Amino acid sequence: MTKLRPEFWKLPLKKLTAPEWEALCDGCGKCCLNKLEYEDTGEVVFTRVACRLLDGESCSCTQYDIRHQFVPECVTLSPKTIHKIAYWMPATCAYRLRFEDKPLHDWHYLISGSRETVHEAGESVRGWTVPEFEVPEEEWDEYTIEDLS
Image (cartoon, rainbow, N blue to C red; front, side, top):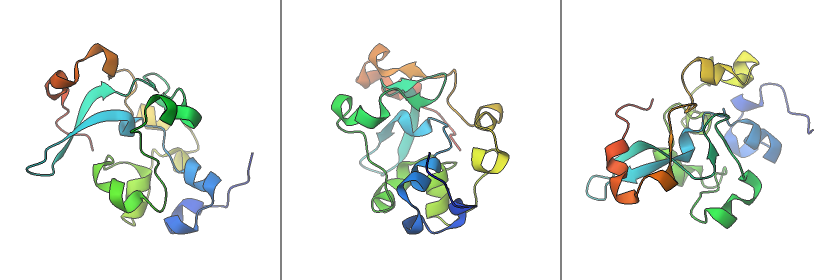
C-alpha cells in the first residue's frame, strides 16, 4: 500500500497523488445513485435507484477498476474534471467539499479513523437503495429523494 501524507486531504486537490485522491472517497455510495437533471432548470435530484454495480451494503462499486466496461457513462472523477462534475455530487461528498474549500465532516474515516462512521452517522446509502434493473428509467422520478445533504 502506498504511504499517504499526513492530513493530505487539507491540500489543494491538484496537489494530491493518485492514491491520495482515491483515499479521499468517504465510501457513502451517494455518487452511485442515479440522478435526474431537469433541462429547463438545471436542478439535479437524487433517486434511491442505484447503479447496477453498487453493492448496497458495502456502498462500493463491485467492479470499480473496470466499471466503464459495464457502465460506459460512469464518470471518472479527477482533479481535472471535478469543476464540471461537483455540482451534481452530494453536498456531503469529500471531493465536493474539498473542491469548495470546505473541511471534511467528523464522520469521514480520515477524521474518525473508522470506515464505519459514515454508515453510523446515516450518511451512506447502506440498506435503502433499489437496484436500477428493478425500476424502469421512466419511473425513477417516483424514487426521488427530497434532501440528500
